[in-house]
Image (cartoon, rainbow, N blue to C red; front, top):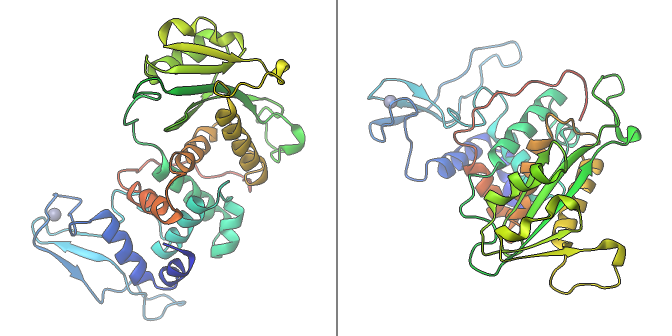
Length: 320
Ligand SMILES: [Zn+2]
């Protein structure tokens, strides 16, 4: 879906609804209550209650009825769109923007672009992140023999000047440790870690990496002894930068972290510790689908909308 195709969907709620139905029900409608796939009919001409603003009510798009269990439903049931009054056309726009911009977009940008409240924009961003969150890994990182997996750690936040939550008591100045594993031929995984001690880093990293992989890390002591679990372990000593290793470097992991940080500072201004894992999933999603088109990435996020019904705490203050 390019921007001009998207524009057509954003302007037409019926069309947007049909697109989401096509993506989530590739073989036709499925009743979310009894699982039936037959004796289901589209209900047309159903309108919402008459209000002052809409004296004739508004047409309800995408309403279906199952004649097995006699219940009515829309494609939103059981997805990130459930319990939301925001038109699917606006959801499509939000998903596309979050999938196609390299560093992501903020709730503020979405609020302005869609002319919705900050609260709604914030809620949408979080739900789209849920749709982007990775399914359990298909395979281990570095599998396939003699692959290279880079591991690097970094710290997020901590600069008081970047902290817009001055009126909140959320530990301004606290840095959050993040560890990233990058399979050069495959996926990246990023975690918030409580500290960068050896026990912590290795307990998280080891089970995710194939034993036949070559590990590259910096010379941080947290990785000492990791060699015995893998084919090899190489360390990069940044204080001796002039000995640039050609193969055994951590450049991928470092670029990942720099993109993540630029995104967090430039787009999100400040991310609380509570929400950082969700942002990390969003960055992972874009990185792991970096070789596909914006359009395919958007499709995959739409398909990820199913089965994600977590509730989110609403924002208390006007914050990013
Ligand atoms: Zn049914």
